[in-house]
Length: 370
Image (cartoon, rainbow, N blue to C red; front, top):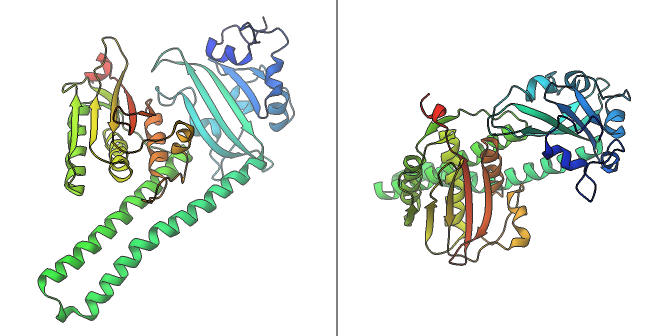
């Protein structure tokens, strides 16, 4: 067994195992079959394995045995280094991955870089860092996404702005002809459209932070049931529809950002109200003794989501049905919850509709008493 396997967790060792499940002794030639540049650093920040494509992308010098900080001498357009910006060994203790971002070599060559952080347990030290490098040609995909984003934003902003402009122009031109009730109705319509604009702009800002690894989180232990009740009250007041909450009334504290928790839950509930049918139910699943995660499930009684397209729901600009939307809500949900060490999954509800399960880390005893 080569030196790469010794001291590296099984999670990464499995990446270089042969069909029988045992590690090969051919310097892990499987890495050479991958279409991307790949390198792995151990818990001390030393590169212990890399394929030739990674070495070629990073200057052509051998990578094994060198510090990760030396190898990953990449910067963004503002001169910030990859190591200082992502802090793979010293950043947020619950992170397990670094989202893909565009980084530059000294000669201006652009690479798309993502990384996986391997830990033995949640909150534990990083045991290994696996880095994937993609060529600049993949930048074309990002450019297409940006073009799609511009088109989507233009379309989504146009409708409420047209409404605001039309109502205000009418009100200014015919102020004396309207009574107080008519003026109030017009102002309520303007308020609804501006509120929609505010939400869309907030979503776009959050997505930009997620895509550039600049999402700011304020993790703390808090009661999810109290936050859940506030989200439900707000959704019911805004739509007039009844939302049923069932399950554990006294769940354990979770470790998350309270504002981002509310944002995730609001988006999922809004998605169920807008695209689902019938009763919307939120279930707080009981947490077994010793478990490390709390699950909240949001169900509706609509047509559900076909298994074949469930993975696409969390991609940018994905839309289904005739009720519209920006196509960014569920992408934002996935980005926010995974950044906090949680997960989101789509399943079938017992009623035949969609069931969105949100999993959040349970706060430890030490976290709860801070």
